Length: 603
Image (spheres, rainbow, N blue to C red):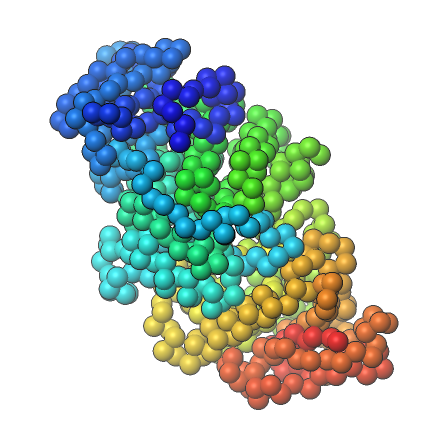
């Protein structure tokens, strides 16, 4: 680690310092602890620790204050008493704290991150952004995936970070997923914010244990061959008076004008035109990727940085866009192989284009248009689908504009939207075959994928952060069969490079049929350097003998059915392994049951 005095103030104020988390906050030193805080407009600042109030002295350029407190040590709680110019004061948690107390307590905790020793050298050396490799992300809320005591667990009953590791590895690998994406783990005061209203950007939430236990979780995932991605919130923060808000008696991290300073969620917007704010966010990201070995960050609400208040009509926020470019460039340079993912619902151009070509520099962008169109299609009854094929095909009209990732995220299973399975048209029994077709379509569509926990068991209750997932559903054969289907589909995805090797190349995908040669049917061809796979989908409630012309060089190919969503072991009616499918007269011909699909290897 850098020394306490390795300070680059020019970089700090320019917004390009990824190292300021190393020289700010609290650090054990000799017979006590050194504390340093940034509070340029404060009249005075004291640190409260071990029942004492110790005055801090101005240092560096006078905008910073520091103190050495003899007798303080790792594990001690502390906070800053910040005196405003009018003589009043507010006690604040440390913005740069590496650890925090468990809510509702909110003081910071002296922490030393140097004690844990990772054993994931091989993973770190070979990890990549997976552009030409499989990338299937399992999105997870750590407090409600599984809970001690199961569905009857009380509030505040959680597994520790490292206690999740073994069952999580087993489950994620069984689904064929390559990475876990955790909803925000930075400290936050309100459970119901899911971590999206942060109070401690550098501090893992104490709900699930200590920083060392989080390191152990990531380490164990890596040793099992599973990557770890973290949801990162660079747009806004919690309004609690003891946190970042009005930190030195002024709007230090937020806009001074509420017209742009208050977000649509009622939180404070970070002021990205200030270099001090940019360095705080950049260094927080560097901490998660460096000290905790996360393999990537998914940035929440990128459009709220790129455009003023996220509104394209207000125009581009130039300083915000510049921050994103610096953010991507610096982190890619410091952490080779890490992936940066933008959650962006806007049409901002070049989100995944390199910054050297005028882009923002992200590796992937969520395709929220694909998500909305796809779910809208599957909510329609089959008769209406006959005039709505564009909802399935339009995504390929713009797919080449960015490196898209297809998300069915937590946002789609809350707030009265219903779960993914519940969104499917029809009655209870009719939802399962359609959900199976939906996930086959998602797997066959170009682009990497993300799916939220619970979707793999066809959960029908909306997600609630205070309850674990309804694993009891697996006692019902139809839900257990759906999980079996998701596991086999995931295994096929990993095993067949045609489904991922050329996701973003011009020759990795082709429509075999996007004009409904049979009602509510469509067909795709995926290609790699070694194989080609056809996927045939019937979204009608009637069976179809589906015949689709093939490219000339496949006119005499042999067809091997890899999967049929209607096989009995998945909850369907077709005998396992029995699917009529062959190539004749230059076309692939398959008998598809109602609301079913098939994946076919063409040799």
